[in-house]
Length: 319
Image (cartoon, rainbow, N blue to C red; front, side, top):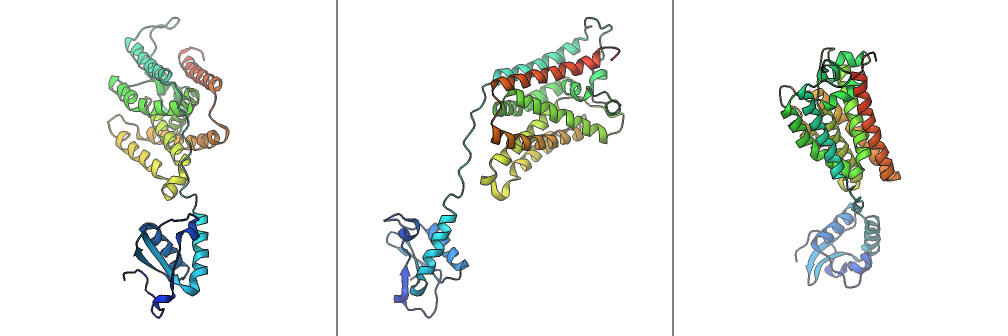
């Protein structure tokens, strides 16, 4: 007779079956090999002698007669404690139907880039403004008080390829985030992570350091999404809770460190602030719910006003 646990000195007639219905409460239940081996490990951990055998309908778990009550109690307690493990994943939130609104913002960013390339004069501003000179994230000028550069730099790109790469790669993450949280809240978080990333980068770079582009904001989106996943699915991930963040870091390494004009510091800081903002946001959304349509519309309007106010401060003389 094959068995995993053979206790010498116990006669064969002194071994009794653990009936599955005693433990899991279902009459006519049979034991799978996986479950019987798991129960045997539980009893081993409690120093209860046992052995397992194949039976006619599944597997059998046997214990000595004088250990039967202890074995049943231990297995009942184990099943009670693990009845609802692993926990069910949280119910999916309905995604916000705002793809058109999000794509419109991305298209507007592309249109703005093309307007700049035309080098046309604006009403009341002559000659045509030096957009990059006025709005780039120049470290020294940011620290001298030109706060608007934290935002305006996110709307500028060095060339068409720079713009297309940000829209193509970043657009995917931005669409996901806007669908998850709503456009207003998502764009508010994106602007915050981008601006904070530019500020932190300016604090650590030389005064002459200069950069433009929405990449800081894009990696903010990656960080926010990673944090949301890590918090929402923390029970399922258990000891692998850092997996979404690790995957996002791998993406940062893959996409955010190549190219001669790549500003790794801005990417890394945008990602880091995205992680922090995502953790706070997921906690608040789980507790209070996602902002409704009106609140999201107001947040979207506020984001637009922040961008316009930043460029106003950059362009209007005598500020």
